[in-house]
Figure (cartoon, helix red, strand yellow):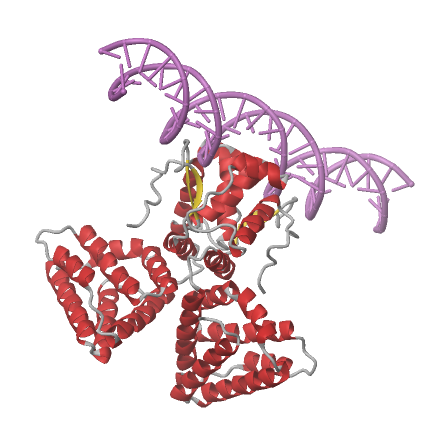
Length: 238
Length: 238
DNA sequence: GTTTGCGTTGTGGTCTGACCACAGTATATT
DNA sequence: AATATACTGTGGTCAGACCACAACGCAAAC
């Protein structure tokens, strides 16, 4: 069921380009920080049109594998970057938009992953200084709901990063941004934002305390209730 | 840090096209089964070049949102399909190739997700007729290792599908195909394939039995040992 | 009347060539 | 030596021209 790789039996020209680059990646000939050849040269080398090269590079860009910049000098051109978060976000956001991913499934998956993350962190009794900083920032009075949610996202993402699994971190990033629109819209349905945000902040503190104290089950329960409660309040995930 | 959507403040022309289509998706003006306008018309409508439209559509295609076909008639053109598996596979495969995703993290994530899946299925004591069919097919004598692994992949994917979470199913699909090359290469390091495949088949049966009997913890343990054992044998995930 | 065959039409797929904007770099000017 | 200027190479974009392909419609043949 997997696609044919490396061997360029691809029919469309842009797939030839994509396979070629992928082949160089797996062979180690290309890696993070390296520059792709200029589009014109790549087109000439592979005997395809420049537009086909561009389509392939466009795909790589959206998938978070390259960053392109115009101009001249060492910073120009297409550079391998391997930042999976952006690609995962685009993918999930569009899939949710096209109803390929039900919002409820996104919410459930987030709940699942984050519970595991917090359990892992608690088992190691991990210290989370960045988390404390973000929570302090969220305590600022008069913080707009949108800014609060942005910090909230950073907080949860920092937990994923602390867990140290890059795949899960990217997934969490994608999951959150895919329902970001719904989350932001959801706050309009909250009657007393002050009260809600105070509760969320307290729950965050509890989660952090349980993790740093090494209370595995408590951490899991807290994060589970935290997420479940918020989605229940905003009528999401139904 | 999500991207700006819908509002076309995008700088690059292809992003305008992508935003436009995404906007129609979230608005419900486009959905699975619908046709995108012809490339030429879309270019004219949005006042961009056709090549920019093509770049956007190419992205959507790789992400698993549209299927394109030439020719005329109701089957031609770009059709919304929302098949997330392909997009997730491309993304993860390329990220692994570019060392954005360490193989060890992929393996850990798969282990995590599949454990949860089997636990869920066991809680519902789900019946899995498709799983039995696949296992029967894997019992065929003289089956080539590659074919065995293909069926193995289908078996594990069928568990994910049975669990009913489309996000997790897509993730499982992507995770597996991203390390497919390593898995296939790994069998060359197995000294006695007959013995190994017999063990794998037996473990599959045990997993299925535990699930259908509703033994949650047993199912979880079995799937965990099954995956861990295989990766240990093929020296993967190190 | 039915079937067969062929041209028409509209779609994506591709290539070519031509610009533009931009950012470094080299050169000339002061 | 400092500054201004021209040059070069990069991605970004567009326009136009083909091609292959699949469906449709109409006409000819049966």
